[in-house]
Length: 228
Length: 228
DNA sequence: TTCATACTTCGATCGTAACCGAAGCATCTT
DNA sequence: AAGATGCTTCGGTTACGATCGAAGTATGAA
Image 1 (cartoon, each protein chain N blue to C red):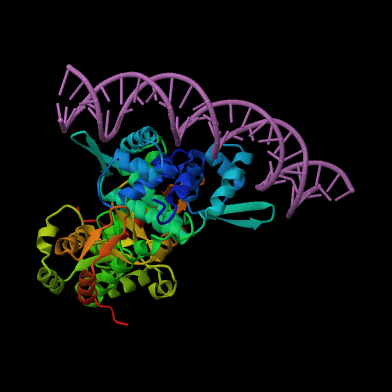
Image 2: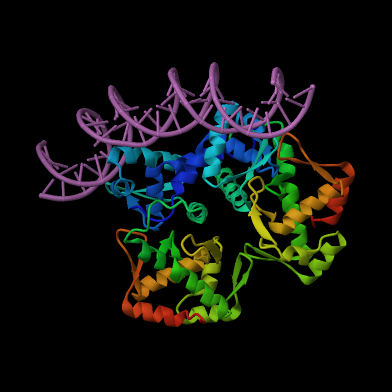
């Protein structure tokens, strides 16, 4: 009966509501301080501190000291992927935490999934890239075509640069709100960064949602059209 | 702070050791009775009963009454996929439950992952299918080539039949012991079934391991060669 | 040095849920 | 009808861990 890896341990780590809230907050991709995470979890600083220590010991979180601040972030994108897949699963079974709140629509429209774009806009972007032939989709697998490489170079993304990283170039990530795939991997990250750099969008300080400027939204929708 | 789906709920379901053991036992693909699952979890029947009720309410388990027995199984292959991905994650972080026991080697060699073959042999099979060109791999995505279809027909598997199902034909599934991909999806299931039908292998009654007969093993290794 | 901020550790409380014994249903057998 | 088997529900105990107040440590500012 004692076979294989211990899924109970990490299940228990994620299973506490306060910890789950902190992890969800960290899905925004930004490193947060213990104080910020305590607020996200709805608990006091002391309690948060013990939770964070446990999460770190469990390999879910990485810590970086910087002056008298201590920044916490998800340990790597494997953690982000795991959390998103659990979210997808939970959403599919209707395990929603509460009725949709006021911030929910913004979150469904565009949000950060660890380091790439998710939500309606994230799904739309991948759809458009596949339709235009820039990305080939085979089942759950994605790859960039040669024409895709030149297309992407036009908007300032050097794919060959990204290829050199150990991390996969493209990966599909199941979107819990849309229940369809969006683009993850180093290319997904690079695209989102470029939107920030161009000033098309910015992160919301409080939440994981991504807010597009009117002009940025226009450009985005034009760059990634969908046939209707 | 209350955004999106409730990952804590399903984390907590998986986070209890007794429940985790029962779920792991059900990864063997067979439906088990409450009594069997109580043994797998190392708890009494009463306790198991309440756990099973919770897992069912959480959508992880499905129940089927048959006479005075009550059979439990994973609700669908989404649950299997989720559990395997958590196992992969846990194994990668070294969250092993104990030092390798006596049954561990057999489990690493060949085991059932919900309904398809995993472990060393599972990985070998996929590798071989990709090398021979029967399956095309693009990132994490897999698809059967036309020559692959005829190859598979030779060993008694009708791919076009499988295609009609709603379930994906091939899917890659991360193997926690090998930390590489093996073949899941309806094709993975069909292949494993055919090994059982041919008498090449059988399930171990106690564990998730798959036991090959000497002749079956010979045939398997010949059918799925690897270049050295 | 002194004070303030950021965080951790200690100590104690409290609530929840895991657990089992015993009793209660349901289904099959004889 | 009586008994056996498989499982659930009830009641009460117990233990673990989440929580916070208070004290302790580290870093930066004045």
